[in-house]
Each structure stands twice: as C-alpha cells, then as structure tokens.
Amino acid sequence: MAQPDPDSEAETITIHELLERSAESALELQRKDGSFPPGRNYAYDEPETPVRTTSHWTMTLSKVYDITGKDKFKEAADAAVDYLLNHKVRPHGFTYFCRDATGKDHCNGLVGQAGAIRALAHAGPILGREDAIDTAEEVFAIHPFNEDLGLWERVEIDGRKLSFDRTLNHQILFAEGSCHLAAQSNLIAEQIGMFLDHLESNMRIHSNGLIKHYIGPPLSSVLPTIAKTPRYYDLIINEVMSACYSFSSKRRQKERGYQVVNLVGLSKLYQSFPDHPLWDSNSLAQTLRFVKINQEELVRRENIRHGTQLQSIAIAKIRSRFGGVQMSGYANLIAHDLQFNPDSKALLDIEGVDPNTRSAMVVALVDLPDLRISTK
Image 1 (cartoon, rainbow, N blue to C red):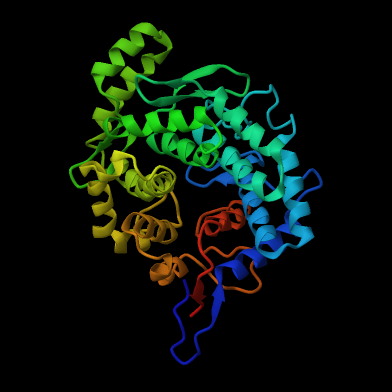
Image 2 (tube, rainbow, N blue to C red):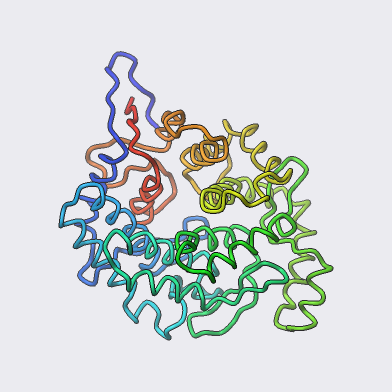
C-alpha cells in the first residue's frame, strides 16, 4: 500500500459505504444472464466458471440491498441468484460446474460448492427467496458424509462420488458455508456437529501450531472404512503424502497462507456452535497462538501465494471472534488490506490477482460491522 502523507488530514469511510461503492461498480459488471465475469484461481492460474465470482457478488449485492433498501441492488442480487439456480451451472442436476482445468474435478472439491451454498444461504432470507435456500440445502445433501470419519466426499458435476476431499480447509469451508442453514435443517446441524466432533483428530498440527494441509484421520478409523468402501483407498495415499510433506519447506510455506483460511472458517463455526468442546481444546489454542506470534509476517504477506491474500482482514475476524473483542479494536488491521483509489473498481490491495477475482473479493467485508476506517 502507498505510505500515508503525514501532512494530510486523515479521511475516513465506513464499511457499509465501501460495500455500497463496490456494489455500484458491480452493476456495470453484471452480465445479461445475471452472472459476473469469471476469474482465475490466482494460486494455480486455472480458469474458473462464473460460479465463484457470481456467488461473491450475490452476497455483496444482497448485503447492500439489506443496508440501503435500494431496488437496484435487489434486482441485481435476484438476477445473480437466478443465475446460480439455472440448470446450466448444475448441468446434470448435481453439483456446480466451478472450473475447467485439465486433470482436475469440475466441482472444485468441496470448496467450490461451499461458495455457492454460502451465497444462497446468505441471500435467500434477505431477498425472500425460499428457492435459494432450498437449492443450497439440496446441494449440501448431495455430498455423502461418513460418520465414522466425520468427513464429506466430493461429488463430480455428473453425480460421481470422488471419495473424500483430502484438503482440510475445503472440509472446514464446506461446513462453514453451510452452517447458516443449520438452524432450519436437522441434517446439516447434525453433520456439522459430527464434523466438529472429529476435527481435533482429523486436523494435524506442526509443533509450532501450523495446521497441516491435508486431513489426518487416524489409521485406526481409516483402515476399517476402506475395508467397507474400497473407493476410499486414497486415504492411504493421503497418509503417505502427509508424511512426506511434513518435511517440505515449500509445503510449510503453503500451509502458512492457509492458516488463517482454516481459522476464519472455524471462527464462523464457533459463532454458530459456541458450546462445542472443540473451542476449549489445546489444538485450537496452538493454532491461534501461531497466528498471534506470526501476525506481523502474515500481515505483510511474506512469501504467501496460497490461501488468502487478505491476511489482515482474516486475522481481525479470528482474533475478534475467538478473543471476545469488539471488531472495532481491529479497524486498523482491516484497513491494511484496503485501498482507496476513487477511480478503482476494486477496493482490495492485492498483487497477482486477476481483476475479476479481485473486485469480487470485497465480499470479505460483508460479515463485518459498520466500522469507520481511516484512509490515511
């Protein structure tokens, strides 16, 4: 970010003002079918469909309509929801078609589906769209959940079951994106509860509190599960790969970027399931301690290419929610990830991220209170 001018007066703007300004720019970006231009997965430079950017804008537009009551934002949010409910984005009636990358699934694991579920669950009540809520619940229920391991499987867009999503943050974000539906769905509430029950044993942690990238269910549970369902054989591969990556400095760098992704997802689950014993565990305390100790480096995004480029906003959410501190105490931290160029359609200061992805990432502000942020 540009360094502040000590001779200029500090200017301020509120989170809600930032969201409305961004939503205004979105009205120019939205296409006739309600979608938004697709981005790319910046860490891997893979092409995406419009599902992720449209999901993000669905949340932002519906939030701004909720704030302002202006019809233009409702109309745009409704159009985005209509796109996410169109059969073209779920071409076989199963999961969302999220990416088209050679050699990889089209559903983008659990994380691709989490984005659409989260958006529909958020926008549905604001817009009075029961069809959005019903679709979110339907997509969630498509994914098999193994009660013995406390993990969900990936499901390809044609309905094929692809075994478990082995990436831990995908599992966490799928639970977090769906937790908004738990109050009205016993199925979702029960599965997320069981996911949290198993998470301490499924989440492997380095000695310094850094969360390992892959799930780590104990072999005592894995082997009987594979015996019953052979398609779960990749859990053995997962065990071998996890052991190898434990000594990889490159993998540690990747895991540093994802630390706050995991924890910001868990912080939302904490808000929805505050009485779960996981929150008092030593494992969680270790992971939070890592963020506190390494906060300055994470905020500077040193050697962080994976995970999220919005480290400061994520850290503010994590420390506020788990620490029981008002978010206003972290206003300066949040401001670190924002830029205030009046000619820019993007409010996020992110290098190496394509414009379509970057502008949609203003969704990170949707669940923040209306803080006043200094622009200098």
